[in-house]
Length: 194
Image 1 (tube, rainbow, N blue to C red):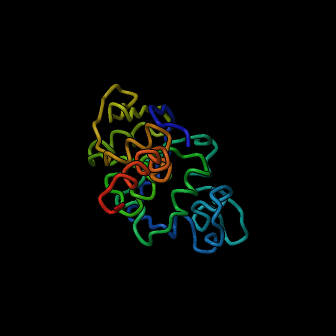
Image 2 (cartoon, rainbow, N blue to C red):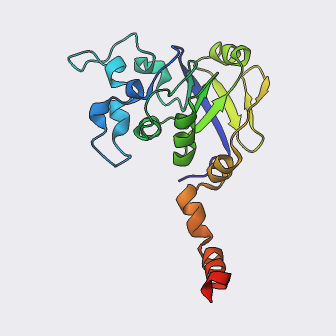
């Protein structure tokens, strides 16, 4: 996983509240344990019509938002089931961060474990950022700030261990493996070894 320090990207807005994980990646795409290729199914039932043609009114289908790495999502984003495929699909599509006024707890945890930064801001801050849709904003994870094109800086909080993993380009398993020598030393020195 690539370390996440700062991200400068244009944004795309998907303002609808309560977008659940089944909307993010429909259940028919859950037959794989591979992370790659899931971007094709991202928001599939909303992005495409019944014949598989892109819906022109869906925000991700507009040509001017191609290559945006920041999704400004409506409140309560990622609610519903705990499928880890949801952050996988967002990452595979090209998103590195989701900014919302509320992100479901399980989705937030899955996102952090997989390298997707979930950012929660106030409604006023979200509206400010949404007003700059398509323009470049900056997320600085080290400073825990989002900077709008106007120069306004917005602070956000990230769970400390998830933040550590993102900054260092690792996940919980990678973190444990990097401490394997300490774990082994502890196991070998404990009173249970008598």
